[in-house]
Image (cartoon, rainbow, N blue to C red):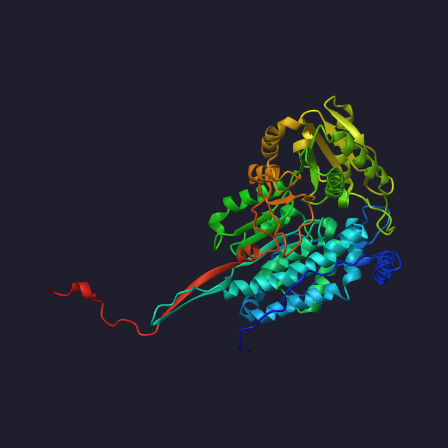
Length: 544
């Protein structure tokens, strides 16, 4: 076994490629997309290092071209969940006893594989399977997951370096960070390939074994991630990838005595149900499970009368409509002063009308499809309701079409009151609601924002007045876990803005930071005494 105190490579954020016309990366990505479209893949589950297939095949279709078939995945059942748990527990001892620098090397290699030979394959899979344009795929499936892997290795080493500052003469105090007892369940969302990769790997990096269930609509790129992890050297059984329905997975996992924690990103309702189930089963577990979750958001942008109008319009349009508003951080409610509304309305409408909408393989399209028919139908329902309501006005958009793909045209609703339904309910799509407030109602508007939604994920204030910025930053301190000043409310970068919110938005354990990794270890304090006492008597017991 190697001996030494090792320094890991200093992490830097992965450079974002532009995919500009004529660039090498644009050509390579287009080739990867065409190669993916030309074949139908047969995607297995991965349990204990084995590829597991079933007779229940589920077809995969691009949301923007739902008549095309990308391939099929094998749907599992409770027996596969149990097999995944068994495989994880069988791999546990060897994995947690592997020196930390060996674990680090595996995930650093995974980062380099994604940044290099797998970059275009994983971007193409994300573009096709999740309907992201080239830029949105690049910042997610390539750059963010690479950043997660590299920065998490750095955070892991920093955690291990944290030791008691005092060891009195004759003793040595130290702390070791043990993996959790049991297995971790990673339940990942459709909207970010990077999150799907980070949730299992962050726990595994700290010496844990994982059962991973991705969203069905993200299986296509999850399979590429698993290819990378295997090539990077993740041992069999350390990360087990299964495709089962949620209730089946939950029934097996949350009743298992070795369930040690869940790493979750998804809806608030599902997370609350999981938490309740864990509570009801708490007597079954070997230890108290770690519950880490990032859920929904009703994210806001607040425009102050002193704001730069053009900067405000750009922040609103990008924050609300990039990736069709399907980011947890996407702006879905905006508060605009009366004095700026006419000009802002003009700019927003102009920008939205300039959007090109269509499939992801046409790089001129800024807007693509929403993830599936269920999402499409929900969004169409709210748009239709707004058309009928006297308290709402469609400013731009308001149309939709699912004949070829699940296209919701970016829509801006102006609400006449701040508690209109689309101001507080999470829609998760390209639908933005604006409330116009009187300029002299700034303080009242701060209070409205703070109290309108159950969520507290992201928010932004745009202003030139520093007193207003200071006031908003304080008044909205609990309304957003990620707060932006003179910027859109999306785009958190690993190593720069640790991500997570509180209230109904999750446990705020900040993905992309040391805070998150600390949830996947259980510290043990060790005190060693070199010359121990040999007499129980203390000096004060002496006779006068």
